[in-house]
Image (cartoon, rainbow, N blue to C red; front, side, top):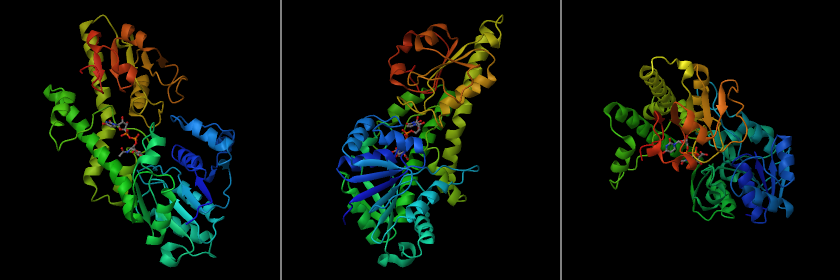
Amino acid sequence: MKFDRIGVVGLGYIGLPTAAVFASRKLQVTGFDTNRKVVDIINSGAIHIVEPGLEDVVHEASANGYLRASATPEPADAFLIAVPTPFREGHTPDLAYVEAAAKSVATVLKAGDLVVLESTSPVGTTEQVSAWMAAVRPDLTFPHSAGEASDIRVAHCPERVLPGNILRELVENDRVIGGITPKCSAAAAALYKLVVSGECVITDARTAEMCKLTENSFRDVNIAFANELSIICDQLGIDVWELIRLANRHPRVNILQPGPGVGGHCIAVDPWFIVSQSPELARLIRTAREINDGKPRWVLDKISQKVGECLSRDPARTTRQVTIACLGAAFKADIDDLRESPSLGIVKHLGHSHPGPVWLVEPNIHEFPSMLDPERIELVDVEKALSEADILVILVDHTPFKAIDWSKVDKPIVDAKGLSRR
Ligand code: SAJ
């Protein structure tokens, strides 16, 4: 198959790096995004997201004429759909962006084109994408109804990259490719082989959809196990981080790390897609979600206990005079992304519930987060927090926090990441 022009729908954390990687191989790529501002930024050779190395690749590809952005779809030989799949109230998947993307791509399709859904999706979505496109284009045939003879090929190839490491993982990771028919899979594999050095492993669309959900659910269940252990160990007076280090010396044990909860747009979301499709059967997956979602509450209870201890040591003091400093608000270490962050949720909650000063140390941000109340939360540097706060709450294992010699810090600490105990 020949792909003279590639269209990427959705220019966010996945779509933009994907478009840039194809364009860097001197393929003609047009990225589509409904946000005009995003289109203008990319056409100026700049980027609107934070990802190491991406700005240079986008800048070069657009300066050399290989990458262009547009607000409306244009014809291409292959389309990659990389739009968000959030969940609605009640944890049911919201496929509105996928539906809109499929319907807009359909308007410019011609016989022989390939459409690949990259967005993490519940099982059956790829067939649904094919059906949505067919409804717009009755003049073409689609694989969900016409099978191998279809004019259009449709496949799922879930993205699996780790934010912060996207450009390398886009090229090096193995890709799972699930076409609605074998011809669809073969076409999608031919496309990805243009840029991927990892293996392109072929399966069917439903298995590929479930595979992505399984990867993130596996991680969520493993983290829930670590979080549950951390609560049990706290009750038993055992250092959970030492415990996990020791248990992981067993050649067949690999427990992840506890923390203040699970955040981000993937691990905390995707397992719900399985739960919502198989509510009676997905018992472990649901429980893991509940354990991880319940962890911030447990951390808040630990903070309240420390406040109580401060007051009982000094009865002349009131809660208003107790200063709590939170270290970190991002959803994981060494990133600036605060969305869906359990740490941010803890800081926000303290802003409402603790009558005294609440400070936040977040070395990766330079503006006050819009989600927090500036009347209640103050951004301070780490030195001020270490010297002046009454209680320190370690929420994120950012590198600068790891570098602190915690053995010299003589203050009450609630440590959700185990930095002060290593
Ligand atoms: N976390 C822990 N303990 C750990 C590891 C992570 O509490 O031992 C927490 C983090 O602090 C964070 C959350 O889990 O709040 C998620 O972080 P992450 O680094 O596990 O994952 P993401 O969300 O950045 O990216 C994941 C990756 N999936 C897997 O590793 C199976 C990535 O490969 C996927 O492409 C991405 O989801 C996605 O887009 O689905």
